[in-house]
Length: 266
Image (cartoon, rainbow, N blue to C red; front, side, top):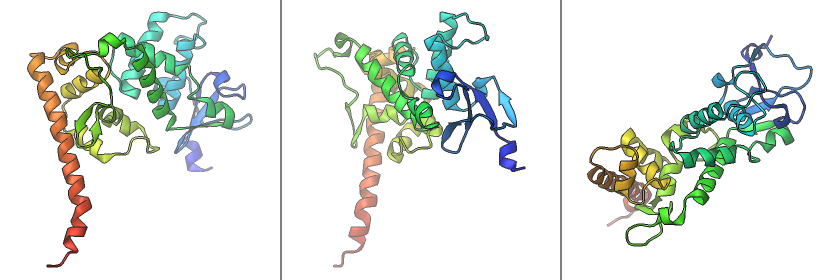
């Protein structure tokens, strides 16, 4: 027997998401695929919480739609579903925890991000990036305009420049934890990765809260995540993110211009 086959575990998902009426998938190197009728699996897992990220996403999708339950009974518990979505959003998609983000992720989950599984029998790992992008788009639509205005009346944007050619949108989108979950090269700018590695967990929370519209200024974003002395801490995070971005741009410029300079003669 193929040793790789003996290690394969199949997982139950909603049959309507698979298109073959069976509702069983297994992991591949690039995502998940359907287990066809007549195909044997060495192991089967009903507990999808320990399954691949894509399987967990499909499970939570079922909870949101009301077609899947946590205890196997046809009883839909809203509070339990919300808790599962919140956990998935924070640990897999790595987005801030808030009521608005919960609604955005729930809305995105019931979208067509998993259509390739039903249509082609395979769902690539990059589908998680598409799911997060959709959640981010929905979240931006949910943020009222008045929440996106500063004291000077300027509308905040995730395109806000942090310096060094990096935007707030880029900084949040390439979160280190999400990069670890993504193998399809959706977020592959090492400069962003380097910036985030230099931010502490508390500092990263402020950046994400600011991007999520949880505060109209950096100080308010710091207060939203419970930082002590939010005015000073928020300003420190803003300056640090900008400085790190500028440093990454400086290093990149040196790498690009270095060979040309070395090749010149006096």
